[in-house]
Length: 325
Image (cartoon, one colour):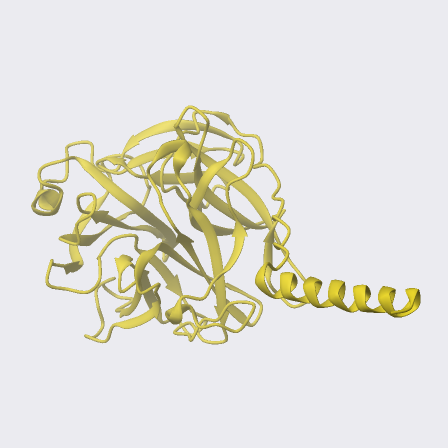
């Protein structure tokens, strides 16, 4: 064998080996980098925060806590405690909470001159759960009128009635998305006059085959309806792996697909926020259309395991997909 033919043979062997290694061991995709949350002030510890802008341009936040905890802010930066929606308790929920006063994952909307509060009653890991509705003309503690049960789930069901979110589309139809684990995220239509179910139809719009998906939030921007959800593990402090995912549709009832075109009902979802640095397990997303743009509100865990409210502005790329900025 000549020197030249030997070199050629070695080159072929190297190329083949390189291709084989490439097939067996693809280079990992670069880890996304995410911006830090906007720096907040005051008392901003909160789990599962929901936010609404009030007619006087201040903000009201509801979050998981005893009898639905409330905060308020004048500027979306500095927060103070504002009591509880039901300071005298919510005994109608005890069937689902085993007597605990902790009520979960509230959702806030202001329309038609009043605040609409959907909230969950359950215990950890159970789908013996319920979603309730209350309204108030002021949003102040003790002013909330209990309108009762919206829907419930039992151990025999394949869904979990927690994590509600109300969306009102451009034609005035009301949609409630909800769900956690089991078959995933469900959607029902509500009667705008009562806030209760309009019919018995229930759509499964996102799921992971029984895996960790929950906390839906439906939001319209332009011609698209974006379905935000949380994937993976919540509620384990700084060890949480919660992350914010999104898909979109041209209809409020779906199908919702991710950036690659995968249906969220088949496990799809595009990640837009995950743990980074001292921001652990960001999740339970909500979106507020505010004067400075669309705002993503969520909770994350600090290094000391405290649940902290996080806020970032959202941007949209050339293809209309949201990103955290």
